Length: 278
Image (tube, rainbow, N blue to C red):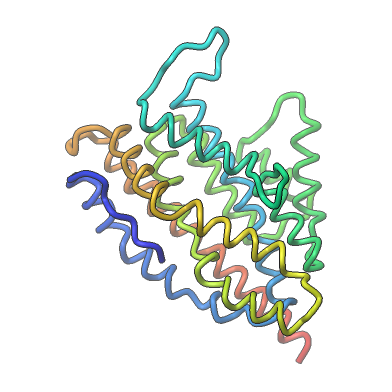
């Protein structure tokens, strides 16, 4: 797990990080990282994880709406450093430049799924489902209905529902905490070496796009965005005695617990498919 240093002396941040440390350790030692050893097992991971790549943008856009001005006429609003962070991440996630072309990270992930032979129908159907809605329904019931219609895997369903619970809270500090502490993605660090070895053994380059995706996240989520995100949470929550810090701790724990549950579900599905082959 990439260590995130506190940009300023902030006892509230230290308290939050201390509260969530047991969950972070559990996530860092999760059995998933040893469970994926071949392409078929990787497909199970990708078919679930793609929904986390997608709903990450929901958190990001909610922060952009709360920390920047997206209205006309425009006016400068919000905290300058946090405004910069969010707009920078939006640019990278929504319109990154990779191999001489502009592409979102979700589109890059979908390409990697196509190349690996993973099933992209559920995520594509879900995107189409929401694109067709004149009034988008992101209520819990609305999500459940959409998931059923689009055959979204169960581990991914529960994870996305947790993400949208934070988004629907209407509390910027809750969204910021879920974004900052619940989205430390261990996949790039844990899987890049494994996938390079796997890709070499396969010999057809079918994992090239996924390796590019992982390496890009290692590059952009390293030294700069982590500390800036911590600063954003500190700016939003304010004084260490502010009650918003307690809600931020709860939100961070929920987000990490949801990620652990997602990984649990992926491992269970891998084991289930392995037992059918035995």
